[in-house]
Structure formats: structure tokens, C-alpha cells
Image (cartoon, rainbow, N blue to C red; front, side, top):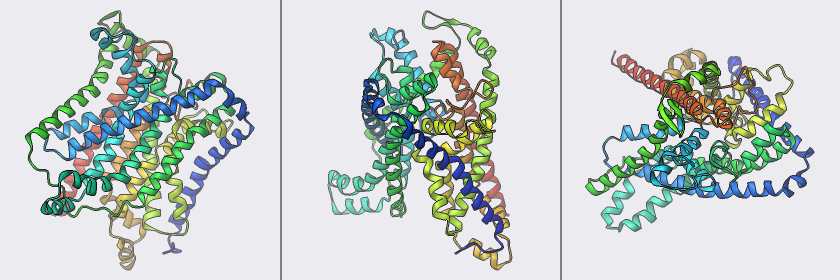
Length: 535
């Protein structure tokens, strides 16, 4: 149905959101594409460094994606298809890599496996982990938690009925796997693979830290734009990085078309097996240790006198980092993350409400604008913002950092709310109109209480990712507005790993604290809703 005349507020809201996406997404990308036309593309591709960088990026992304998706699938099976104890604890540990920047994972590998790394010296290794395999390992650590979350969610809602029927018919397990499991996982696996590939091929944090002479395209782009201020050449690199992301976006759209076909009429029944559960426990324990150990090394490195020569305890690194402005930059990050969380959550809710609950003529356009950031890597979006907003009143302020983070992370929270609102009774607004209840009051008293948990998760997603992002803000921040995450780049360039470890630790602590706050708020909301329903 179309918007009624008495819904002028929602009409204006839809118009404002459409204008917002036009200015914040479409025009910056068009400005960047225009710069590509002025660049000497032939000269760029003749450069052997660029050709090697493209080949390196593809090789690393293919290898790391295969390993990350395989590891994620194994972990998802351990959590969703076994009776292993302590699942909640393991799920928390597996999510820890998502709370620190990708460059921190590279730094953790340097601490452990670098030329003078702790495990390098302990195991008598030589050469360190720099180069291809260092980037692959760091990329797997960075990307597998996202792939795991997606696959675990798919396995959680798999219907057990076909498996029960197959067992009654006496089909072998191999036939069951090929006839039931693989068809069910085929589209989600394609989706996860493309999403993981995009994350890895567009990341420059890990290659910057452990790549050494093995340059990837994002690192070359970063060096060209930051070091030489060559925005036209950077726009060509950005367009190349946009291609795999665009392919992932189209695959994601195709797979979501079938998202509603599979539903669980009966939850999965997990049979008892001591061997299987013991194996799963061993796998989860090993992976969790591999995840936690590099993060714990940040604590030791932060209080080490001089890595790796003198590991005696000192607070000099912490004091020196604070003297260089770490706390003020941390305050910048927290303010940016809070603003992104509040504004992004509100905009994503309004956008999802308009596209789900009010199927008006412009709903398809608004939905497309809301999910288009899935196809735009942060490093590309940051460059587009530099070229479009340079010289404007918001350039060089925190406002442009808030704006770029909102757009960069908008799609996932929007889709969370899109799915939540789609599960509510579609006749709520019609019943409210019949009873003379305004739409705004329906939103306030009926809709919001039912999606309050999703709203909190949306806020947490915006906050956590804004705290740790580097790629989207690297080109836009200045000495006054710089987020604390960019200090990791600064200290890495100065080989001050102790200070970089302390900054990574600060980001991890703040993100963990926010996760705890969101968890407690959700518990309070559940208790409050339970009391209200009882009364």
C-alpha cells in the first residue's frame, strides 16, 4: 500500500534517507569514478609493481579464503553438531579476533613468529613469518570469525526432518551428506566464500604488518595515496578492489533471494558420541588457544622494557604512549563510535521500517541504497570521501569520520533490523489505524519493544567496528580528529611494537566493555519484558 496523507512524517523521513544515501554513497563513488577517467591507466598497468601486487593479492586471497572457510566450517560443526561442554565460552573466545583491528593480528604474528619472535626463538625457526604465508595466516585469523558466525547461524536453523527420514530409510551417511547436507549448504557456502574473499583481498592491515617485500594491491594503494598523494592513481586501484566486492555483493543478493525457503520445523537432534565430542573439544581448545595467545602477548609486550632484547617489566611504554596522546585519541574513537552507534542505529531502524513495513514506491531504491555498502570496501570508501568532501565544511572534522563509518558499516545492522521487522505480524499497523492509534505511537509502544534486543546488537556492531576500523578513516583523519586505531600504523612505522601492542589492548578492552554492557542491557530487557507479560 502507498503512504497515506497523514503519514507526512514518514514521507519526509523517506525523502531525507534517500537524499542522505545520495550524498553519502552515490556522489562520492561517482566522483571517484570520474577521477579514474583522468588517470593514465595504461601507465599504471605497465608498472610491474602493480601487476605483481594484483597477482599477490589474488593468490593470498584465494589461499586464505579456502583455509578460513574450511576452519570456520569445522568450528561451526563443533559448536552446532556436537554435545561438547562450554560452548558459550568457546563462542566468546572465537569472537575475540573481531574486536581488534586487522593490523593487530599481523602484529601478534610478528611478536610470536617474527625474526625475533618468542615462538621463533623457542622452536629454533629461521627467517620469520614475513611474506606470503605470514599474510595468509594473519588473514585467516582476521576473517574466520565472520565466516564462522555466518555458517554457525546456517547450521543452527537446519531442519532435522530430512535426516530423520533418511535414517528411517537406512541411507548411508555418505549418501545423506551428499543428498541433504551439501544442497542445504551450497548457497550459504558460496555467500560466505565470496564475503570472506572480499574481506581478505581488500584488507591492508595484515599485509602492511607482515608482508615485508610481498606487496598486495591495498598496500600499494595506501602507499600511493598517503605517501605520494596521487588520488587519481589511487582511484584506479580502488576500482580494482571494488570488482571482487561487487561480485560478492551480487552473490549475496542472489543467495538472499532464497533465504526464506529453508526453515526448521524440527531442531537438529544431536546423538551421543564420546569420540566425536572429545575430538570437537580438542579442536575448539587448540583454535581458542591460537586466538587468545597473540592477544595475551599484547599484555606482555605492553610492559616489556625493550622487545625482544629485554622483556623485564616496566610501565615506561604505557606512560610514553599516553604522553603521545593515546588517551585523547582514545576519547576521539569513543566519541566517534558512540555517535556512529546512535545515529547509525536510528537511521538503520527507520530505513528498515520504511522498506519492510511500508512497501511504498521508493522502497526498492531505499533497500538497494541501504545494502550497497556491502560492495564498497572501507579503503575505497575512504578515498571516495577524500575526493568528494575535500574543501567542504565537514572535511577535517569528526563529522566526516562519523559519516564514513555509518556508511561503511550500515548494511549489516540494517539487515538485522530488516529481518527482525519482517518477522512481526504484518497487520499491526492496520489494526492500529482501525483503533485510531497513530503510526508513530505504534512504533514507540509496539514495534520498538519487540525489536529492542536487535537495536542493542545494532548499536554494538556500529560501536565495535568504528573503534577498530583503520581503512575507512586512514585518508580522512588529521592530528586533531585521529582515532586511536591509527596510532597502530604510526607506531608500526616507527618499529615501536610495545606502544602498538598497548593501543591494541586499549581497543580490545573498550570493545569488550561495550559487549558486556550490551549483554547486561539485553538481560535487563528480557527480565522487564517477562515481568510485563506476567502482569
